[in-house]
Length: 162
Image 1 (cartoon, rainbow, N blue to C red):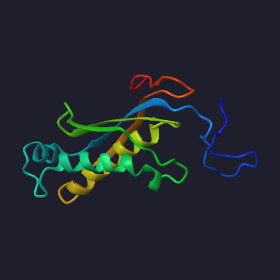
Image 2 (image 1 turned 30 degrees about the horizontal axis):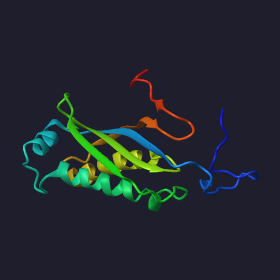
Image 3 (image 1 turned 135 degrees about the vertical axis):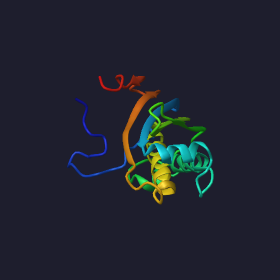
């Protein structure tokens, strides 16, 4: 097992020094799900929500969150992201929205936290915009799906439920 990189020899929190790392292309994909009542999803899909285009607002919130990850997660580096994508898809179950995110850059450190933050904040934004009609929504399945680049190379999550 690898050691925790955000702890120094004394066990104290530190920001990882990436100065000597090579600049490489790096990307990450993450996901989240928010489950809601079928009526809430119907309202969103049909554009009948009183707050407007809920999915568009959540998409923009996810993109903004990825760009601000270093302000939210104390030991994350400030990154110059070159691509952030957030896709929100109504679930086939008729009662959820699947959130898929993608972040990319050329840099000295990975973008996993940015992809995860984008997915989380998009889900939280959906909750915020819909809570007046459905307080019982559940956010779950927030996870990293894949990362590419850097010293550790390519990693993919096992299929859900495996």
